Image 1 (spheres, helix red, strand yellow):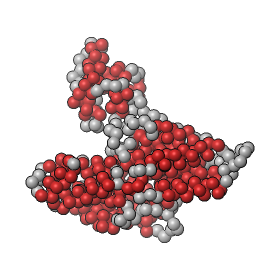
Image 2 (tube, rainbow, N blue to C red):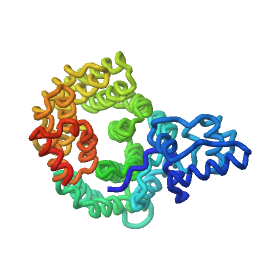
Image 3 (spheres, rainbow, N blue to C red):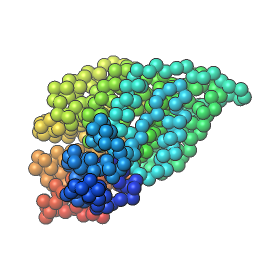
Image 4 (cartoon, rainbow, N blue to C red):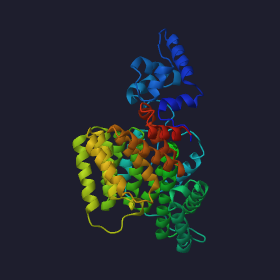
Length: 435
């Protein structure tokens, strides 16, 4: 798995081939040029890059010198937004789908995994998506048009690839990318009727969303974000508002995962305003609640959880494919995580345990994530042996399905288990994690 570059300072440093000690030396030299002194060392840079500390004004001035950034931008944009190297999203427009998809396909070859888009860019994209009405697709051009029979075949193949069980998906990256490339090329040709064009855009959005989740599970967050960015453009061009809202919720989920719940909440507030199907609205409100809980906004979180339950219970027709998996288990487990974040561990533990029992067996990746949540709550409650057994089950499952993101969740708990060395189940788990 590629190393995750979470902070723009690390991205800017690595772009220049500098280690943390080398960046510290660069800052000290910049201080000397100003006839100043700096105590910056590797440990301080590590703290900045891991969100443990924020450089003071003096240090930011020297960093701007090192990266050749105008000092006026430092004050205007604030930390860390003035740092170089972050991408801006492609604006949504009548011909934006193909550039967005091809950017994702091209950039997925890049092994750097820094999250590509700034918080401001993501929130701006969400607002633009919510405020912009899709335009009619271009009329068919000269030559033989893409016909409905070909789209039938493409949709059947896409459904097969996106519907594979998780264990098989880890082996189909090339097939998925190739299929998405084919669909993108057909869209780029503009050689189809309006109904066929809509189907092509919906297919591209679904394929790009699936590929984005594969990259996300592998810890490749920049690639995941770009594929979801392309999916949003495709969904918007098709006129499918609920599908676009689903893509926005995936971007928000990623932001919450990467410890940026404020951005996640802003994205979701734009997305849910244009979502119609009750199941889709339930999922979006549930993800909004997770972001609000992380922000410590208890009242807003409880209100979002209540709305998620009400929407899920509303009678409706068949749910859109992108959220058809939504179940009572998801409501229970995510509600439990919210309560834990809000300082109610006992009730949170109860809900997570109930949700894990209800989860359908086919959702093995989700099971790996939920089991890691349950292991954490069990350890917090002092049920050490049960926690170790549950963590062991989560780790085995995550390893089997090839989901490094889920493996990382379990590994994050290792320090907490170390203090219980000597307990039989704990030692078994620690040995499995080591090997």
